[in-house]
Length: 263
Image 1 (cartoon, rainbow, N blue to C red):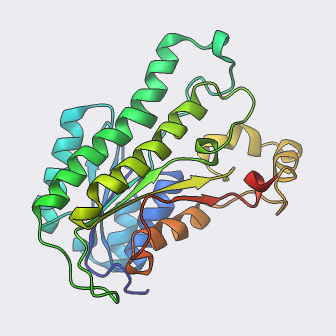
Image 2 (image 1 turned 90 degrees about the vertical axis):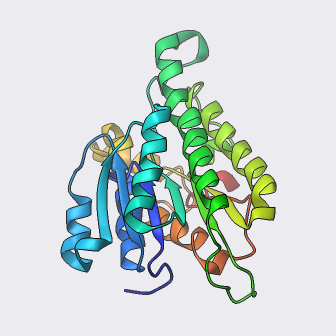
């Protein structure tokens, strides 16, 4: 265990599975007290408390498409931890993913953007408001005091595109744009806003592909590194962006993709 996030209060939305779960565990192993937010618990908060103590994690049921749920989530985190230091938004959906525009059902389009775009916006809205109202943390190595860290879930498809992603790609471009705009707006308040742009990661989101060895190998071969990412690879990047090591980093879309976007 390291102490990069010692006693910082972190919310991880989508924290019960995939990249969110890995990030919750990584943050806890680095000293953070973690609020796991999701539609249902898969036990990661119990795993954390068994390892680090009863006061190190809690679960809050939350639907990121609902304004009131996000407001309540932030209030619960502050009530539990006294403040909110980190908002890490790892929840997403790929509803209507593998379709061209004319094939997409409007209901699926609205659902995807309500989670991937509006959900990120809502989480940022309430997290940033709370962070502005609280005292900054102790000074970092640069002699600066930070009020908070926001790490948004984008994708390498927030920077490029991929065939038949007519809903998903625009939603992730929006997240990259929001991240950059919020970074500028809240720099004066000493709040970092960055986003993660993962490539193809072995997670429940692409299990329909990775469950077939030949399909998995073909997808891995599209990457110069000739492998898929792991949830832990993304969690390590999130840890960096939520720590004092990234003291002069804001508005950054960090690509973790095994070289895919270089091609």
